[in-house]
Image (cartoon, rainbow, N blue to C red; front, top):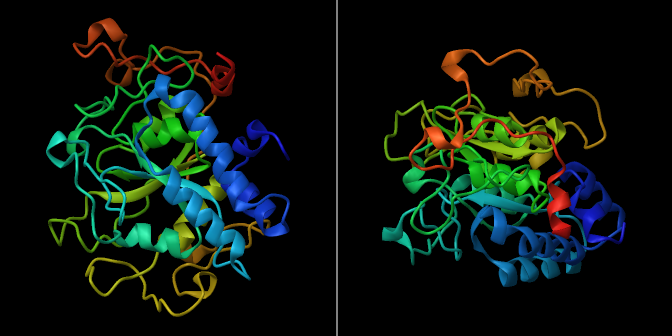
Length: 318
């Protein structure tokens, strides 16, 4: 497991397992994924911000730690640019917040960091998350990794492309009306939109809003289960959150996050995990109401139909 390509092709659970066994270091994993970003992101525009130096510092801390701090110890991830990350620019996809650097993490980010995840950067989104084409005045359009002429979908298009192209094995997203599910289907990755309240959002503008939720994108369902087990559970500042969490207890034994081992058995009933499998390529025509449109049919010229399943990593040699 020495080549950048082999490291970047690992799922999050496989990478976490390799790190736990000492088959590679956190710094090795971070450098491999940063190299993939440097190779492909100029073509795909998946990231608005890449915090390379911050990721390297975090990786060195993980490598120096006497024990693993959590199930994602040393695993690089991406965070959608709608969600606050302490010390890393968070623009919400808007030029109005070009220089905005939050002082603290959103709760979902704090839980991922606590589990040992290393944030490589912020993935692209339409301005304030409104739009099915992932572009804004700061970055984009985010292009489909299988055919850059086509769209990634939105609004978590940056996260979908980052996962599909091997820039990160796991990425965070948000979903109001399909914002993790649509780009996942366009970019041929797995995603989950949890039941609202499963992942607390204490800083949302409307306290009783049950429509939007955090979610995740990955190359395997096991990765989604792992991320949900880490980030799920109640929070006293979110009245609609599900479950009670004692933050002083290890992640794996907190109520409401009964995570199975990385190589273990089926998900527990307590998690209420349901992820639809990715469908095979369609041979019959799409129904008119959900048929992807050709690029020329849309003013932005960046919205296309679902892309063919050609390896995105082939672009690394372009």
